[in-house]
Length: 192
Length: 192
DNA sequence: AATTTTTTCTAATGGTAGTTAGATTTGGGG
DNA sequence: CCCCAAATCTAACTACCATTAGAAAAAATT
Image 1: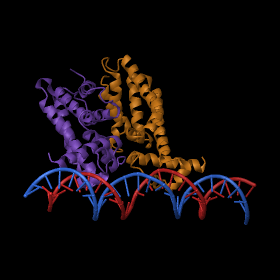
Image 2: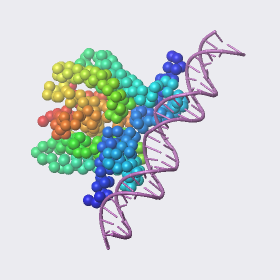
Image 3: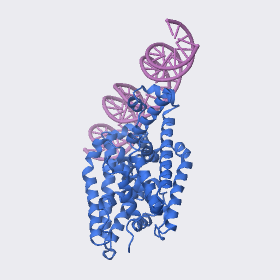
Image 4: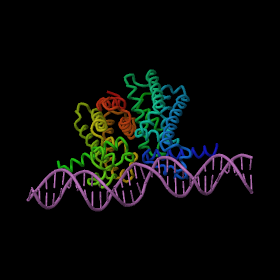
Protein backbone atom coordinates (compact mmCIF):
# COMPACT_ATOMS: atom_id res chain seq x y z
CA UNK A 1 0.00 0.00 0.00
CA UNK A 2 1.42 3.31 -1.08
CA UNK A 3 2.22 5.89 1.55
CA UNK A 4 -0.38 8.21 0.09
CA UNK A 5 -3.00 5.47 0.33
CA UNK A 6 -2.09 4.85 3.96
CA UNK A 7 -2.33 8.53 4.77
CA UNK A 8 -5.61 8.88 2.97
CA UNK A 9 -6.97 5.93 4.93
CA UNK A 10 -5.77 7.45 8.20
CA UNK A 11 -7.56 10.69 7.36
CA UNK A 12 -10.76 8.79 6.55
CA UNK A 13 -10.54 6.77 9.76
CA UNK A 14 -10.05 9.80 11.96
CA UNK A 15 -12.68 11.75 10.05
CA UNK A 16 -15.19 8.95 10.64
CA UNK A 17 -14.40 9.01 14.33
CA UNK A 18 -14.71 12.77 14.62
CA UNK A 19 -17.88 12.97 12.54
CA UNK A 20 -19.46 10.21 14.63
CA UNK A 21 -18.70 12.06 17.87
CA UNK A 22 -19.18 15.69 16.97
CA UNK A 23 -21.40 15.63 13.92
CA UNK A 24 -20.70 17.18 10.54
CA UNK A 25 -21.05 20.83 11.51
CA UNK A 26 -19.45 20.32 14.90
CA UNK A 27 -16.33 18.79 13.42
CA UNK A 28 -13.67 21.21 12.17
CA UNK A 29 -11.13 20.21 9.58
CA UNK A 30 -8.56 21.05 12.17
CA UNK A 31 -10.04 18.44 14.53
CA UNK A 32 -9.58 15.74 11.91
CA UNK A 33 -6.10 16.93 11.03
CA UNK A 34 -5.04 17.00 14.66
CA UNK A 35 -6.27 13.46 15.21
CA UNK A 36 -4.49 12.37 12.03
CA UNK A 37 -1.23 14.03 13.07
CA UNK A 38 -1.11 16.56 10.28
CA UNK A 39 -2.07 20.14 9.54
CA UNK A 40 -5.52 21.06 8.30
CA UNK A 41 -4.20 22.30 4.98
CA UNK A 42 -2.71 18.86 4.28
CA UNK A 43 -6.16 17.35 4.16
CA UNK A 44 -6.73 19.19 0.89
CA UNK A 45 -3.95 17.32 -0.80
CA UNK A 46 -6.13 14.20 -0.57
CA UNK A 47 -9.68 15.57 -0.53
CA UNK A 48 -11.34 18.29 -2.57
CA UNK A 49 -13.22 19.67 0.42
CA UNK A 50 -14.61 18.91 3.83
CA UNK A 51 -17.92 18.03 2.13
CA UNK A 52 -16.23 15.50 -0.11
CA UNK A 53 -14.44 13.89 2.83
CA UNK A 54 -17.71 13.73 4.74
CA UNK A 55 -19.60 12.26 1.78
CA UNK A 56 -16.95 9.60 1.36
CA UNK A 57 -17.13 8.66 5.03
CA UNK A 58 -20.92 8.33 4.84
CA UNK A 59 -20.71 6.31 1.64
CA UNK A 60 -18.19 3.88 3.11
CA UNK A 61 -20.31 3.54 6.22
CA UNK A 62 -23.40 2.59 4.30
CA UNK A 63 -21.55 0.18 2.05
CA UNK A 64 -19.82 -1.52 4.98
CA UNK A 65 -23.00 -2.19 6.90
CA UNK A 66 -24.86 -3.40 3.82
CA UNK A 67 -22.01 -5.73 2.88
CA UNK A 68 -21.72 -7.04 6.42
CA UNK A 69 -25.43 -7.74 6.75
CA UNK A 70 -25.58 -9.47 3.38
CA UNK A 71 -22.61 -11.67 4.18
CA UNK A 72 -23.93 -12.58 7.63
CA UNK A 73 -27.36 -13.48 6.30
CA UNK A 74 -25.87 -15.57 3.51
CA UNK A 75 -23.67 -17.35 6.01
CA UNK A 76 -26.44 -18.02 8.50
CA UNK A 77 -26.86 -21.73 9.23
CA UNK A 78 -29.86 -23.05 7.36
CA UNK A 79 -31.25 -24.82 10.41
CA UNK A 80 -31.81 -21.44 11.98
CA UNK A 81 -34.40 -20.71 9.36
CA UNK A 82 -35.69 -17.27 8.58
CA UNK A 83 -35.52 -16.17 12.15
CA UNK A 84 -31.85 -17.16 12.18
CA UNK A 85 -31.26 -15.10 9.09
CA UNK A 86 -32.94 -12.13 10.70
CA UNK A 87 -30.86 -12.59 13.80
CA UNK A 88 -27.69 -12.74 11.74
CA UNK A 89 -28.62 -9.55 9.91
CA UNK A 90 -29.47 -7.71 13.09
CA UNK A 91 -26.25 -8.83 14.72
CA UNK A 92 -24.19 -7.76 11.72
CA UNK A 93 -25.86 -4.35 11.61
CA UNK A 94 -25.24 -3.83 15.33
CA UNK A 95 -21.67 -5.06 15.07
CA UNK A 96 -20.98 -2.55 12.33
CA UNK A 97 -22.34 0.24 14.52
CA UNK A 98 -20.59 -0.73 17.74
CA UNK A 99 -17.61 -2.91 17.02
CA UNK A 100 -16.16 -2.27 13.61
CA UNK A 101 -14.93 1.27 13.23
CA UNK A 102 -16.85 4.49 12.99
CA UNK A 103 -18.03 4.72 9.43
CA UNK A 104 -21.44 3.15 9.78
CA UNK A 105 -22.18 4.84 13.08
CA UNK A 106 -21.04 8.16 11.64
CA UNK A 107 -23.49 7.63 8.79
CA UNK A 108 -26.37 6.76 11.10
CA UNK A 109 -25.74 9.63 13.47
CA UNK A 110 -25.21 12.26 10.81
CA UNK A 111 -27.49 11.43 7.95
CA UNK A 112 -30.43 13.32 9.44
CA UNK A 113 -28.55 16.58 9.29
CA UNK A 114 -26.57 16.05 6.15
CA UNK A 115 -26.69 18.54 3.27
CA UNK A 116 -29.47 17.47 0.93
CA UNK A 117 -27.28 17.05 -2.11
CA UNK A 118 -25.07 14.59 -0.22
CA UNK A 119 -28.15 12.73 1.04
CA UNK A 120 -29.48 12.44 -2.49
CA UNK A 121 -26.34 10.80 -3.78
CA UNK A 122 -26.70 7.96 -1.38
CA UNK A 123 -30.41 7.38 -1.60
CA UNK A 124 -29.82 4.69 -4.20
CA UNK A 125 -27.79 2.47 -1.91
CA UNK A 126 -29.90 3.38 1.11
CA UNK A 127 -33.03 2.31 -0.69
CA UNK A 128 -31.34 -0.88 -1.79
CA UNK A 129 -30.44 -1.58 1.83
CA UNK A 130 -34.00 -0.94 2.93
CA UNK A 131 -35.25 -3.19 0.18
CA UNK A 132 -32.89 -5.92 1.28
CA UNK A 133 -34.39 -5.86 4.76
CA UNK A 134 -37.87 -5.73 3.36
CA UNK A 135 -37.25 -8.96 1.49
CA UNK A 136 -35.71 -10.54 4.55
CA UNK A 137 -38.79 -9.70 6.60
CA UNK A 138 -41.21 -10.78 3.86
CA UNK A 139 -39.54 -14.15 3.56
CA UNK A 140 -39.69 -14.54 7.34
CA UNK A 141 -43.35 -13.62 7.38
CA UNK A 142 -44.16 -15.99 4.53
CA UNK A 143 -42.44 -18.72 6.49
CA UNK A 144 -44.46 -17.95 9.59
CA UNK A 145 -41.58 -16.53 11.62
CA UNK A 146 -43.39 -13.20 11.76
CA UNK A 147 -47.08 -12.76 12.55
CA UNK A 148 -49.20 -12.52 9.43
CA UNK A 149 -50.94 -9.40 10.63
CA UNK A 150 -47.73 -7.45 11.16
CA UNK A 151 -47.27 -4.43 8.89
CA UNK A 152 -43.80 -5.10 7.52
CA UNK A 153 -43.12 -1.57 6.36
CA UNK A 154 -43.61 -0.26 9.84
CA UNK A 155 -41.92 -3.23 11.45
CA UNK A 156 -38.86 -2.61 9.31
CA UNK A 157 -38.67 1.05 10.39
CA UNK A 158 -39.25 0.17 14.03
CA UNK A 159 -36.45 -2.37 13.70
CA UNK A 160 -34.13 0.24 12.20
CA UNK A 161 -35.06 2.58 15.02
CA UNK A 162 -34.38 0.06 17.72
CA UNK A 163 -31.05 -0.91 16.13
CA UNK A 164 -29.82 2.56 15.29
CA UNK A 165 -30.80 4.16 18.59
CA UNK A 166 -28.48 1.75 20.36
CA UNK A 167 -25.78 4.23 19.35
CA UNK A 168 -27.26 6.66 21.82
CA UNK A 169 -27.34 4.42 24.87
CA UNK A 170 -25.22 1.32 24.61
CA UNK A 171 -22.00 1.81 26.50
CA UNK A 172 -18.89 0.44 24.76
CA UNK A 173 -18.07 -3.05 25.86
CA UNK A 174 -21.16 -3.45 28.02
CA UNK A 175 -23.13 -5.72 25.72
CA UNK A 176 -21.93 -7.50 22.64
CA UNK A 177 -23.67 -7.09 19.34
CA UNK A 178 -24.61 -10.75 19.57
CA UNK A 179 -26.36 -10.30 22.92
CA UNK A 180 -28.12 -7.13 21.78
CA UNK A 181 -29.20 -8.82 18.59
CA UNK A 182 -30.57 -11.83 20.42
CA UNK A 183 -32.55 -9.63 22.79
CA UNK A 184 -33.87 -7.43 20.01
CA UNK A 185 -34.87 -10.46 17.97
CA UNK A 186 -36.65 -11.94 20.98
CA UNK A 187 -38.44 -8.63 21.49
CA UNK A 188 -39.61 -8.07 17.94
CA UNK A 189 -40.00 -11.67 16.81
CA UNK A 190 -41.03 -13.67 19.82
CA UNK A 191 -41.88 -17.19 19.01
CA UNK A 192 -39.65 -20.18 18.83
CA UNK B 1 -48.43 38.47 28.20
CA UNK B 2 -45.81 41.18 28.09
CA UNK B 3 -44.23 42.04 24.80
CA UNK B 4 -40.87 40.91 26.03
CA UNK B 5 -42.39 37.57 27.00
CA UNK B 6 -43.95 37.20 23.56
CA UNK B 7 -40.66 38.01 21.86
CA UNK B 8 -38.73 35.67 24.09
CA UNK B 9 -41.24 32.93 23.27
CA UNK B 10 -40.89 33.63 19.56
CA UNK B 11 -37.13 33.33 19.82
CA UNK B 12 -37.45 30.04 21.68
CA UNK B 13 -39.96 28.68 19.17
CA UNK B 14 -37.79 29.53 16.18
CA UNK B 15 -34.66 28.32 17.96
CA UNK B 16 -36.34 24.97 18.60
CA UNK B 17 -37.27 24.72 14.95
CA UNK B 18 -33.79 25.59 13.72
CA UNK B 19 -32.02 23.33 16.22
CA UNK B 20 -34.29 20.44 15.27
CA UNK B 21 -33.52 20.86 11.56
CA UNK B 22 -29.87 21.87 11.56
CA UNK B 23 -28.52 20.66 14.86
CA UNK B 24 -26.78 22.71 17.51
CA UNK B 25 -23.50 23.33 15.69
CA UNK B 26 -25.23 23.71 12.33
CA UNK B 27 -27.52 26.44 13.57
CA UNK B 28 -26.13 29.97 13.60
CA UNK B 29 -27.52 32.66 15.87
CA UNK B 30 -28.22 34.56 12.70
CA UNK B 31 -30.45 31.72 11.44
CA UNK B 32 -32.58 31.95 14.54
CA UNK B 33 -32.69 35.73 14.44
CA UNK B 34 -33.67 35.74 10.78
CA UNK B 35 -36.52 33.30 11.41
CA UNK B 36 -37.61 35.40 14.38
CA UNK B 37 -37.56 38.63 12.36
CA UNK B 38 -34.80 40.32 14.28
CA UNK B 39 -31.06 40.83 14.23
CA UNK B 40 -28.67 38.35 15.80
CA UNK B 41 -27.49 40.88 18.37
CA UNK B 42 -31.05 41.28 19.67
CA UNK B 43 -31.07 37.69 20.83
CA UNK B 44 -28.61 38.71 23.54
CA UNK B 45 -31.10 41.04 25.11
CA UNK B 46 -33.07 37.93 26.16
CA UNK B 47 -30.45 35.19 26.39
CA UNK B 48 -26.99 35.15 27.87
CA UNK B 49 -25.54 33.08 25.03
CA UNK B 50 -26.32 30.64 22.25
CA UNK B 51 -25.52 27.83 24.70
CA UNK B 52 -28.06 29.13 27.20
CA UNK B 53 -30.74 29.40 24.53
CA UNK B 54 -29.97 25.88 23.37
CA UNK B 55 -30.04 24.48 26.89
CA UNK B 56 -33.38 26.11 27.54
CA UNK B 57 -34.84 24.65 24.35
CA UNK B 58 -33.65 21.17 25.32
CA UNK B 59 -34.97 21.55 28.84
CA UNK B 60 -38.40 22.62 27.66
CA UNK B 61 -38.46 19.75 25.19
CA UNK B 62 -37.78 17.16 27.84
CA UNK B 63 -40.25 18.63 30.27
CA UNK B 64 -43.01 18.85 27.65
CA UNK B 65 -42.73 15.24 26.60
CA UNK B 66 -42.55 13.99 30.18
CA UNK B 67 -45.61 16.05 31.18
CA UNK B 68 -47.54 14.93 28.12
CA UNK B 69 -46.80 11.27 28.68
CA UNK B 70 -47.70 11.46 32.36
CA UNK B 71 -50.98 13.21 31.64
CA UNK B 72 -51.92 10.78 28.89
CA UNK B 73 -51.17 7.75 31.02
CA UNK B 74 -53.12 9.16 33.94
CA UNK B 75 -56.03 9.90 31.66
CA UNK B 76 -56.03 6.49 29.99
CA UNK B 77 -59.37 4.67 30.38
CA UNK B 78 -59.09 2.04 33.07
CA UNK B 79 -60.73 -0.62 30.90
CA UNK B 80 -57.71 -0.44 28.62
CA UNK B 81 -55.59 -1.82 31.40
CA UNK B 82 -51.83 -1.65 31.41
CA UNK B 83 -51.54 -2.08 27.71
CA UNK B 84 -53.86 0.90 27.26
CA UNK B 85 -51.65 2.95 29.53
CA UNK B 86 -48.61 1.95 27.52
CA UNK B 87 -50.40 2.85 24.32
CA UNK B 88 -51.38 6.22 25.76
CA UNK B 89 -47.80 6.92 26.77
CA UNK B 90 -46.38 5.90 23.43
CA UNK B 91 -48.93 8.02 21.60
CA UNK B 92 -48.20 11.03 23.76
CA UNK B 93 -44.45 10.66 23.26
CA UNK B 94 -44.91 10.39 19.48
CA UNK B 95 -47.34 13.29 19.40
CA UNK B 96 -44.82 15.47 21.19
CA UNK B 97 -42.19 14.58 18.62
CA UNK B 98 -44.33 14.96 15.52
CA UNK B 99 -47.32 17.14 16.23
CA UNK B 100 -46.65 19.57 19.01
CA UNK B 101 -43.85 21.95 18.19
CA UNK B 102 -40.16 21.34 17.89
CA UNK B 103 -38.85 21.31 21.43
CA UNK B 104 -39.02 17.62 22.16
CA UNK B 105 -37.83 16.62 18.71
CA UNK B 106 -34.99 19.13 18.97
CA UNK B 107 -34.00 17.52 22.25
CA UNK B 108 -34.11 13.99 20.86
CA UNK B 109 -32.20 14.88 17.72
CA UNK B 110 -29.53 16.96 19.41
CA UNK B 111 -28.86 15.38 22.75
CA UNK B 112 -26.31 12.94 21.35
CA UNK B 113 -24.05 15.75 20.28
CA UNK B 114 -24.70 18.23 23.03
CA UNK B 115 -21.88 19.72 25.08
CA UNK B 116 -21.34 17.50 28.09
CA UNK B 117 -22.01 20.18 30.71
CA UNK B 118 -25.42 20.83 29.17
CA UNK B 119 -26.16 17.10 29.04
CA UNK B 120 -25.25 16.74 32.69
CA UNK B 121 -27.70 19.38 33.78
CA UNK B 122 -30.59 17.49 32.36
CA UNK B 123 -29.65 14.00 33.40
CA UNK B 124 -31.85 14.34 36.49
CA UNK B 125 -35.05 14.82 34.54
CA UNK B 126 -33.96 12.38 31.85
CA UNK B 127 -33.40 9.70 34.41
CA UNK B 128 -36.76 10.46 35.99
CA UNK B 129 -38.40 10.07 32.59
CA UNK B 130 -36.65 6.77 32.03
CA UNK B 131 -37.70 5.64 35.48
CA UNK B 132 -41.29 6.58 34.75
CA UNK B 133 -41.30 4.30 31.71
CA UNK B 134 -39.58 1.57 33.66
CA UNK B 135 -42.42 1.57 36.18
CA UNK B 136 -45.00 1.62 33.40
CA UNK B 137 -43.42 -1.44 31.83
CA UNK B 138 -42.98 -3.23 35.15
CA UNK B 139 -46.62 -2.76 36.02
CA UNK B 140 -47.60 -4.03 32.59
CA UNK B 141 -45.37 -7.07 32.98
CA UNK B 142 -46.69 -7.80 36.45
CA UNK B 143 -50.20 -7.69 35.02
CA UNK B 144 -49.29 -10.09 32.25
CA UNK B 145 -49.46 -7.57 29.42
CA UNK B 146 -45.77 -8.15 28.72
CA UNK B 147 -44.12 -11.55 28.53
CA UNK B 148 -42.52 -12.55 31.81
CA UNK B 149 -39.23 -13.42 30.15
CA UNK B 150 -38.78 -10.03 28.53
CA UNK B 151 -35.81 -7.98 29.77
CA UNK B 152 -37.51 -4.72 30.62
CA UNK B 153 -34.34 -2.61 30.65
CA UNK B 154 -33.62 -3.56 27.09
CA UNK B 155 -37.26 -3.44 26.06
CA UNK B 156 -37.48 0.10 27.35
CA UNK B 157 -34.43 1.18 25.34
CA UNK B 158 -35.66 -0.61 22.22
CA UNK B 159 -39.00 1.17 22.70
CA UNK B 160 -37.24 4.54 22.97
CA UNK B 161 -35.28 3.72 19.86
CA UNK B 162 -38.32 2.76 17.87
CA UNK B 163 -40.18 5.89 19.01
CA UNK B 164 -37.35 8.37 18.64
CA UNK B 165 -36.13 7.11 15.28
CA UNK B 166 -39.53 7.93 13.81
CA UNK B 167 -38.14 11.47 13.61
CA UNK B 168 -35.82 10.27 10.89
CA UNK B 169 -38.38 8.63 8.63
CA UNK B 170 -41.95 9.61 9.31
CA UNK B 171 -43.09 12.18 6.80
CA UNK B 172 -45.18 15.01 8.25
CA UNK B 173 -48.88 14.32 7.98
CA UNK B 174 -48.45 10.81 6.63
CA UNK B 175 -49.33 8.90 9.77
CA UNK B 176 -50.82 10.23 12.95
CA UNK B 177 -49.18 9.67 16.29
CA UNK B 178 -52.19 7.56 17.23
CA UNK B 179 -51.72 5.22 14.26
CA UNK B 180 -47.97 4.98 14.80
CA UNK B 181 -48.49 4.30 18.48
CA UNK B 182 -51.04 1.58 17.81
CA UNK B 183 -48.73 -0.14 15.35
CA UNK B 184 -45.72 0.15 17.63
CA UNK B 185 -47.68 -1.20 20.55
CA UNK B 186 -48.90 -4.12 18.43
CA UNK B 187 -45.31 -4.77 17.39
CA UNK B 188 -43.71 -4.67 20.82
CA UNK B 189 -46.62 -5.94 22.92
CA UNK B 190 -48.57 -8.33 20.78
CA UNK B 191 -51.28 -10.03 22.68
CA UNK B 192 -54.76 -8.85 23.14
C1' DA C 1 25.12 12.75 -4.55
C1' DA C 2 21.95 15.16 -7.24
C1' DT C 3 17.57 15.67 -8.99
C1' DT C 4 12.78 15.00 -9.16
C1' DT C 5 8.48 13.93 -7.19
C1' DT C 6 5.57 13.59 -3.41
C1' DT C 7 4.00 15.13 0.86
C1' DT C 8 3.47 18.40 4.37
C1' DC C 9 3.89 22.81 6.06
C1' DT C 10 3.35 27.98 6.64
C1' DA C 11 1.11 31.99 5.69
C1' DA C 12 -2.52 33.98 3.99
C1' DT C 13 -7.27 34.78 1.95
C1' DG C 14 -11.96 35.68 2.30
C1' DG C 15 -15.49 34.97 4.90
C1' DT C 16 -18.26 33.45 9.00
C1' DA C 17 -19.73 33.53 13.78
C1' DG C 18 -20.74 34.65 18.72
C1' DT C 19 -20.94 38.43 21.30
C1' DT C 20 -20.53 43.40 23.14
C1' DA C 21 -21.12 48.45 23.38
C1' DG C 22 -23.41 52.16 22.46
C1' DA C 23 -26.81 54.43 19.33
C1' DT C 24 -31.42 54.59 17.75
C1' DT C 25 -36.16 53.48 17.64
C1' DT C 26 -40.30 52.17 19.77
C1' DG C 27 -43.50 52.00 23.37
C1' DG C 28 -45.36 53.33 27.79
C1' DG C 29 -46.34 56.51 31.49
C1' DG C 30 -47.03 61.01 33.46
C1' DC D 1 -46.15 66.59 24.55
C1' DC D 2 -42.28 65.19 27.11
C1' DC D 3 -39.56 61.99 29.32
C1' DC D 4 -38.05 57.58 30.44
C1' DA D 5 -37.63 52.70 29.87
C1' DA D 6 -37.63 48.91 26.91
C1' DA D 7 -36.50 46.91 22.69
C1' DT D 8 -33.85 46.67 18.56
C1' DC D 9 -30.35 48.10 15.68
C1' DT D 10 -25.54 49.13 13.81
C1' DA D 11 -20.86 48.72 14.08
C1' DA D 12 -17.32 46.56 15.79
C1' DC D 13 -14.51 43.19 18.36
C1' DT D 14 -12.34 38.87 18.75
C1' DA D 15 -11.92 34.66 17.22
C1' DC D 16 -12.80 30.97 14.19
C1' DC D 17 -13.07 28.33 9.77
C1' DA D 18 -12.56 26.26 5.03
C1' DT D 19 -9.54 26.61 1.65
C1' DT D 20 -5.55 28.17 -1.46
C1' DA D 21 -0.82 29.25 -2.96
C1' DG D 22 3.57 28.62 -2.70
C1' DA D 23 7.58 27.16 0.26
C1' DA D 24 9.92 23.57 2.55
C1' DA D 25 10.76 18.95 3.89
C1' DA D 26 10.74 14.19 2.96
C1' DA D 27 10.94 10.42 0.00
C1' DA D 28 11.93 8.27 -4.25
C1' DT D 29 14.48 7.95 -8.48
C1' DT D 30 18.43 8.42 -11.38
